Amino acid sequence: MNKKRILFISILGIVLLCVGLFYWYTERQANHTKGRELFAPIYEYSGKLTPEEQKRFSELFNSIANVEPSVSQKYGLPKRELFQLEAHIMTLYRNNPELPFMGNNSASASLDVESYTPYFSIRALIAKTRLADLPADSRKLILSHLETFKKRLVKNSVEVYMREVRNLPDRPRQKAPPMRFGVASAPGEVGGEWVLEADGLVRPEGAKRGVFQITDVYGNEYSVDLDAPTDTGLTEDTSEPYAEIDRIFETLTEAELQRLSTLSKTDRAAEIEKLFSAE
Image (cartoon, rainbow, N blue to C red; front, side, top):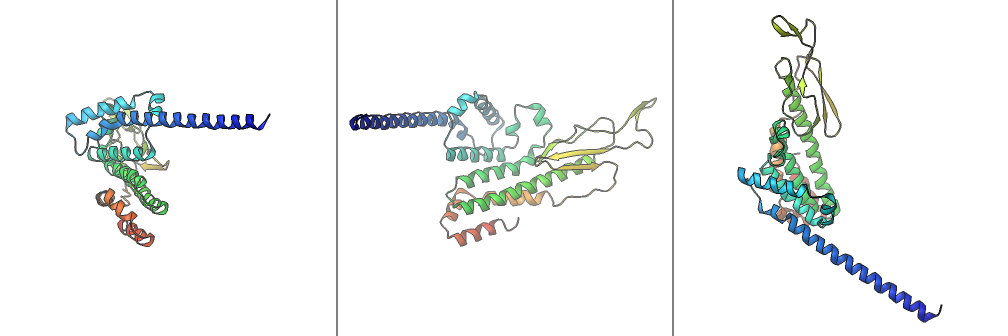
C-alpha cells in the first residue's frame, strides 16, 4: 500500500469521524430542545398554588411521567438544567406539600404530607448547591451539612411516629397513624390478640398488645413496645429542625451561593460553617 493510499484512507477516516461527531452533536442539541419544550410548562407554576392550579400541575406532571422511558431518555436535559428543574419542582413541593401525592387517593390519605415539607426544602437546596458555581470542596461541605439535616429529619419524624403509635387507643383493628416522612415501612394496624365473647371483642387476660416494628428510609429498625408504660420522648423537638431548615432555605438563595463563590477559600468555609452553626 503506497503512501498516497494511506494518506487518503487517513483523511477519509478523519472526515467520517467529523461528520459522525457533527451529526451526534446536532441530534443531541435537537433532543435537548425537545426536552426543554417538554418540561417548559412546569416553570409556569410557582408559589402557593390554588386547588385548580394544583390539579392542572398534577395532570401535567403525570402526563410527563407517563411518557415512554425510551422517549424520556432520548429527550433528556443537560445536567445543569436537570438540577435547575429539580430545584424548581422541589421548591414548588415545599410550598404545596400535598402536590406530589395528588392523584393517589390511597397514598395521600395515609400520609402526613406536612412532614415532607422540610425534606422538599433540603432537596431544593441540594439541587441549587449542585448547580452553583462553587469549588468542589465548598460544594461537598454544604451537601454534607444538608445530608446531616436529612438524617435529623428522619430520626425526628420516626420518633414522632413512635409516640403517635404509643398513644393510640387500645381497641380491635386499630389503624396505625398516617405515614410520615422517613418511615419506610410499618404495620397498617396496631394489633394484639382479641377474642369474641358474648359482650363483644375483649382482650384475653394476660394477653399483650405486642411490639410495633418500624423501619426508616436508611434501613434502621425501631420497636415500640406497646405494653411498656414509658414514653422514651424525642431526641429534639419537631419545631427545631423545621425552623432551622426554613432559615437556611431563606438564606441560601442563588444570590447567596453566587456571593459565596466570590469569597476566598478561608472566608467561604467560615461563612458556610456560620450558616450551619445552629445545626
